[in-house]
Length: 455
Image (cartoon, rainbow, N blue to C red; front, side, top):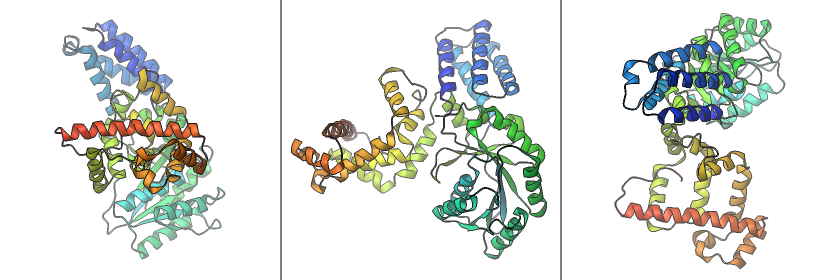
């Protein structure tokens, strides 16, 4: 999970601060030294770190803070506000022309940053907003790049314009613009070629495309896992080609977070989107305030709610609420809930978005659970649950109490599982069922809030 080590460091630092009744200037300076080291280790640009720490320290040693009733919490508040400002303040939307005009978006970046996949993700997002999108394949160098875009375009339900690899990217871009206008498409996304490193040929090609086509937005795709080097790449592209915004990919990976905390400050360009997974729907607007909350271990409830609402329809939520109130939670419900949770990134991802639980690795029972979930093969575990439930008869799925040891043996054989694995899954189900019954009882006693999340 992105920022996890930084999150852990910050929580340890602020735990020491909030444990004090009042803070001296030495307390603040000591904490800022720890913050500086944590940011540098997270691969944040050293100039950005220097400026950030200076701002926080200047505010934190003010009289209104030093004489406050809870100065430790005030320092945390200041750090949070400065982190938000560092990443751009408010969320920045992608500027688009009206639906009657063509908006041309050029994606650029190094090879391996996930640019071609990101082009399809962006196309899918814009299509869901009611736009008529065209993808254009301008990468004529990388083997299978055009085919990859065509496959992803088909998944997204978006047309892909291609002229093969025997035409120049400039000619393809010009032809794509004509095609989009002739077919009344109002968004054109140009998927340009990347290189293994920044070079003159790549920059000249991008400059030539912009000289021949009216590009409205040039977006740089950056691999968040490259850390400090991502900032150097962003600076090079901005100086040579001129960029209007940044898309961070692989923000769900094992990244230290330096790119997200440095790019905006170094280039002056906003981070517009972040890629958080491999599915075409795993593209989110970049919210500086939410990201700062996650870094500080304060959770990200708004994103969690949005993910839940995207997975669970109003009708399904009401139907499940009725079943919970009656205590009728069965294996079919269990399978649906696990699938929805997996689509939201799994329980580990959900825990990371809950206040106070994001950086809890190794801390208590919940911490142990999170550590397990971060390392175990969750996909395989999910498949075992699905195989077991699909091996049940329809009656068994809706009548959990009817499953005897003989039935378990038959189910295990049908699912290709050991009987011990079936026992374990059944035990997990019973624990979930017990929790659902408790929730049902609370609802009957007067809880009127609609059940929204699948846990």
